[in-house]
Image 1 (cartoon, helix red, strand yellow):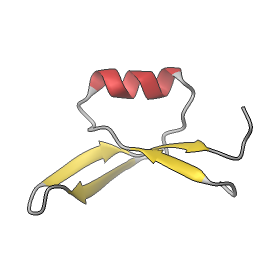
Image 2 (cartoon, helix red, strand yellow; image 1 turned 60 degrees about the horizontal axis):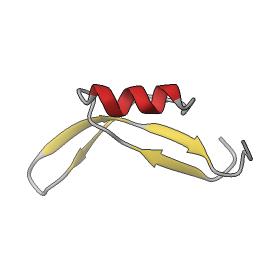
Image 3 (tube, one colour; image 1 turned 90 degrees about the vertical axis):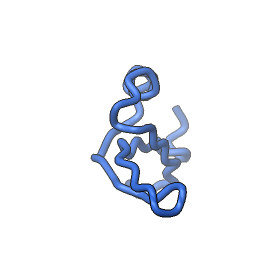
Image 4 (cartoon, one colour; image 1 turned 180 degrees about the vertical axis):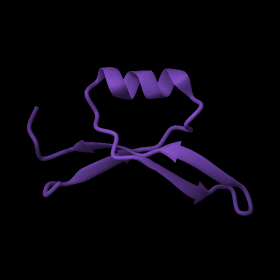
Length: 55
């Protein structure tokens, strides 16, 4: 996406947060892994919304 993206990253198993993102029309390019807190790896959906789209 060429615009400014905001990322939303609920855990892959967090059904309610993922349902809200899906229902709001936020796009899901895939999953990511990140460390939080240090030493604890989390797998999350990498939802993104274009802040410049103007919807």
